[in-house]
Structures are given as C-alpha cells and as structure tokens.
Image (spheres, one colour):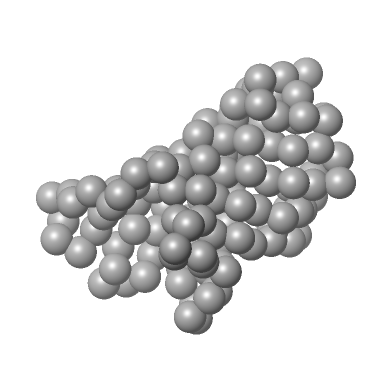
Length: 115
C-alpha cells in the first residue's frame, strides 16, 4: 500500500524465511531524472519488522514508468537493526513490478551476515 501523502510504502514479505514480515519504506528524496526519460532514481529507508527482530536498511531505487519495473539496493544498518539482525551487515537487492493499483510483487536476493 502506498501512502503518497507521507512518502511511504507499507507491505509484507512472504516466502522470505527470516525476512517474512511487515515492511515500511520511507522515501527520503524526490525522484531524480536519469538519462532514460521513463526512469527515475530516488532514495529511502526500509524497516522490515519480523518476529525475530527489525532489519533497517538505507536504499537507492530505480523505477521505470514505461514498464512498471523497479530495482533497489538495500545496505543494512547494523546499528539500527535489532534482534537477530543487531550488528548484521550485508546488502539486499530487489526487483519488483507493479501488478495493481496498490500491489507490488518482486524478489529479494543478497547476503545478510548475522553476528
């Protein structure tokens, strides 16, 4: 679900093992133009709340309006994460596609080094 007034997206990760949980992405910049006229870049912060802790990341995104496809790089913040994610390091990558007015589906890959 997108709350455009506050610049945040709320969602859920399923079939993600220890990453199953609620997501909140707060966008920290406006969209910036790229050399491709249908693609923008922007930054944000992801909070993923699971039953085993909270994973916080600093993010950079690309989104192509022509294809409704996006990607993101999520750098884990070890100091802001809690539970099993406290002190964790690593990077996650996502690919996503807008599939409906309030629906985004995609995949997350990458590595999390737990302490």
